[in-house]
Amino acid sequence: MGTVREISCETIIETIRKLFMEANTDLGEDVLSALKESIKSEDSELGRHVLEKIVENAEIAKEESAPLCQDTGLAVVFIELGQDVHIVGGNFCNAIHKGVKRAYIDGFLRKSVCDPLSRENTGDNTPAIVHIEIVEGDRIKITAMPKGGGSENMSSCAMLVPSAGLEGIKRYIVESVEKAGPNPCPPTIIGVGIGGSIEQSSILAKKALLRPLGEKNQSDSRLAKLEEEILEEINRLGIGPQGYGGRITSLAVHIEMMPCHIASLPVAVNIQCHVARHKEATI
Image (tube, rainbow, N blue to C red):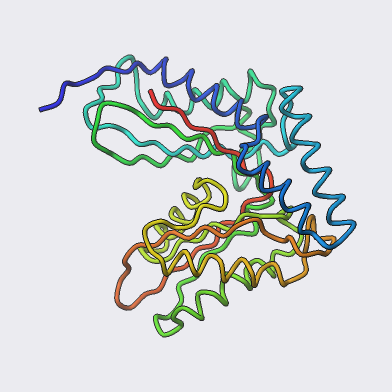
């Protein structure tokens, strides 16, 4: 039997505060490198100009600790909670929300969360969207993912019929990106979840966006091949950077999959704009 390790709520609060402030100002090196590489392969002069400005914006944001985008996102938090951890000093989920609240107030980040009907702003960007997975060990891995409304609005989920098969899945993903057009601020990253249930496919699609940019699916060679094929099709759509036309509509397609019911074929597409923000820490 493992030794139980105590982690205080205050430690969790402070970790989340730092992660969301950093995520909103410091674009990951994997994304930045992909953007720089895409300039070389973009045929459109206007497209190259847009990509250069996107890179310049990211560099200025990091240098000045300023938000990468005025939409500082809905606060999505992925937690891997070690089963040998004992949370002390308060309620775990409340600590997560408090960390988000501090980040958005201390970091002067835009608060974008409101009541769905009255549209009254909650004032501190809470509540966060929290996904918790219980794992082995005595650590907590926290991933902060601010998700902008523009790209989230263009995301979708469908319950395809099983006979749709692989070609039906490909068609749905590409059509979803084509329908989104310039709205999610391309170049985009496309997260795809296949299988599970309607809600699980959507979670898989969002988790797929956390994979290092361009890293192929390591668990299933079929999915790695599918990622390549779909990216090629998307980049033949001609939408281009910020919708001005060109070859680079998306930087990568990441797919995750799990078994589903024999009568179902859930497919979710979570579109991420070029400001692909996520930071993680283990405590």
